Image 1: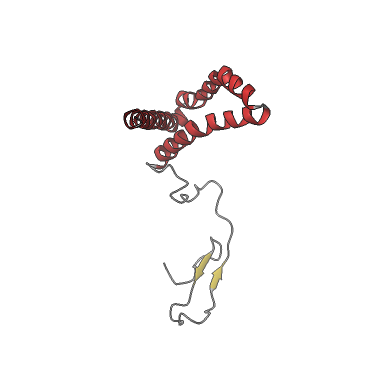
Image 2 (image 1 turned 90 degrees about the horizontal axis):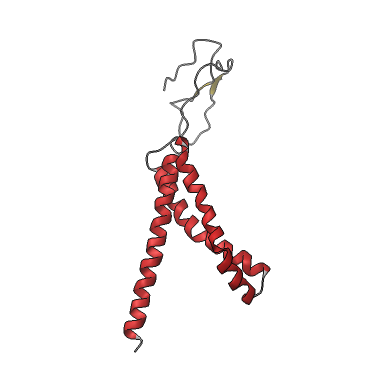
Length: 150
């Protein structure tokens, strides 16, 4: 950083600190204030988390898919149980469960549009992985229960 004051009286804000001042003292700052930069100039690059980081979209889509696969059916059952008693809730949940599949329109719709295609594909991958883990663990536990229950 150049420690000399700006040569142009009009320009962006330039702050120069006193390099020879001890760290514990409050050194005065030299400030030059000019006109705002031209609006036609491109803005400075935002920080790394605001840009499309190579792994951010994939990780966010995958974990969104994991959450989607667990939260949507859970909210469905919680809503039915809130509005109906237990016997009615069981019948209603069995009859209306195919409507939960309509929520798959969201990630499939994301794959259709090029702007969200990568996120949507990783979201579907997260949904598939979550369902595979649930089915796999459930099958393994069921097998253990049958084998060692006798």
